[in-house]
Image 1 (cartoon, rainbow, N blue to C red):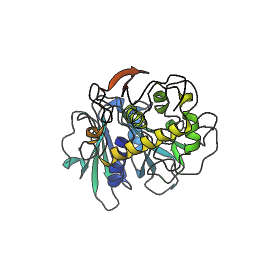
Image 2: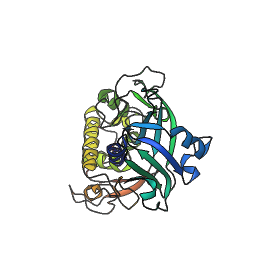
Image 3: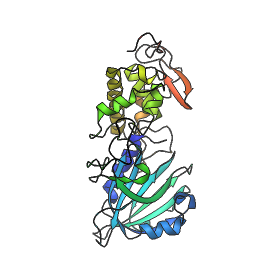
Image 4: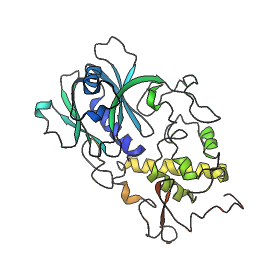
Length: 328
């Protein structure tokens, strides 16, 4: 599944091409693509046609296009077109109108016609081979403040800072309101977030994957951060020291920033950016997907095990199991 660097790569590509454009028409080619709307394709088309895309925004692995009426009747965003890439969602953007665009790919689930103010036209195709992804129109809600006892709190007042990457508004789709700020968000309160990471008896990898605490860290980058910080994935959260939790956050930020610089991680043709290009960070992975290969630090063969239902990779020498006698 695409993680923060992959989704951010798609977001930046979309923003560069379609921010400011008006949705002129929509062709839903598979109804399940808009399955959350009661009215299906008809409701989706009627809702988004004539809307201007103000910006492409992201929090963690969740992306949305902020909408306002193209006629200028309301310049305060009220709705968003949420984009859920699922396991294989992609966007391909073509210059020109529908009639000049390439024949839709067999996995094209929606084709969107866009018009810029200068008269230029674009065609954006949403492709999804495995069909877990979808598009959804939903209301924008104030970005919740952080409940320091648990996690983002829907009832807390607007925190008055941008909701995520690519947006200037402290608004986000209702379905994303429970998602914590991501590891690369400059507005993340690291002190509070790391305190939440260190609570409870769950294994630290499960905590890293909890998107309600710090979002954006998925299976690949959790394994990489744990390897970099020399922490066993099953160490109980309460046994992680403050210093080690900071190491984990630093490692997660470093590995995701490095992946972002290379366009994300691609293992096959299912993840590409809006130009159809793959990311190359898979060549730089230290742990994930390298079962049986030597650790680049110590030479010990890396292990793989299913932990919490997720394939997990680590070095048994560098990342020793927590014994309960002491915590690093």
